[in-house]
Image (cartoon, rainbow over all chains, first blue to last red; front, side, top):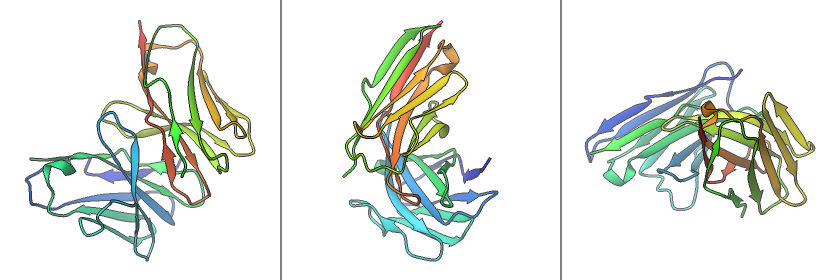
Length: 113
Length: 112
């Protein structure tokens, strides 16, 4: 089955630093990748949709200058949390699709101290 | 705007019980509906995917049904086991390349 690899699985960083999260589709070419965020005991909230080679489309309320998304190839999308603050601590999950069921990564637990 | 609701938020049952998890959505114009399992601190595992033209899907002890017109889906778990303890998320999709809209999930605890 299709596999989506997300890295790192967890990261701890200091306030003010930037963190990059990678999402790779290992055995298929993902035309579209989605980035979700999940707070404890809450549902997954879509942050942005990215298509290869074009700018990401951000959901209302998500700061595009804070959460930089790059989808440079059909198998890789990155989310960079810039100048992270404690309130950015959350679980970030990517998903990828190629006109097929969505496949999810295992998520990244970000803790900002 | 699509909204997905899952009630109750938590459920505790004794081992061996058959149970039904409910999901409702406000916009019936969906492309498909998917049920996921999420273990604490982990990512999502897809359990069942029902296309809009389908009424149900089965996998092992799991059966998911879809009633698009009424905006409802149920996930039936037969002979529940402690290993079934997890959060079950329902999500709907409007189109082939559209995002998934998730419910908040139902946290299931199966007592030995």
